[in-house]
Image (tube, rainbow, N blue to C red):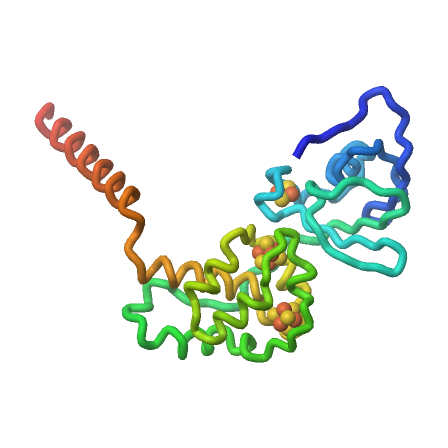
Length: 216
Ligand code: SF4
Ligand code: SF4
Ligand code: FES
């Protein structure tokens, strides 16, 4: 995303960030506006490119409340912005290497994510997702044991976990998606070009080790 601070121009957009009234230039992102105004406690920022998912904000426009990524959202007059704290530690624990074959994936999925079958189809996760992912459908696919399709549905996920925040059933859709992607990769051969490159690296490493031992 291109950014702009309109150096030298008087700030003419007024908004609230973390409870402080600030002024910003048109074309600034919310992150730039926070920095420009010296808003304290804005530390949850990383890539500035909509990739790391750390700059999560809650936005209020009149009576409408939404969430988004601050580095991808431009300033607007009268918008109220609250930077959300970093996501808390995941509540669903598993070791992907403990899955030795595909027969018990589904039973274990429901042990790990017992809430997944309680989706109330409120669309909260879809509305929250800044990447436009069909999160609700992804959860339904995983709940039906269709992990490959679920993983594909979450392909663009940046793990901002805004869908987790939005979910009234505490399903943790982001982690359902991550599980689906991990389990699909775990039980599938890697792409042939990746296998080929890994083999090249292995042989190069082996050659280097042999050369070192010859020189000793
Ligand atoms: S699916 Fe959830 S975690 Fe992934 S990008 Fe969308 S809101 Fe963020
Ligand atoms: S927010 Fe939770 S309950 Fe609502 S549709 Fe998404 S997964 Fe289902
Ligand atoms: S700072 Fe990385 S997504 Fe906004």
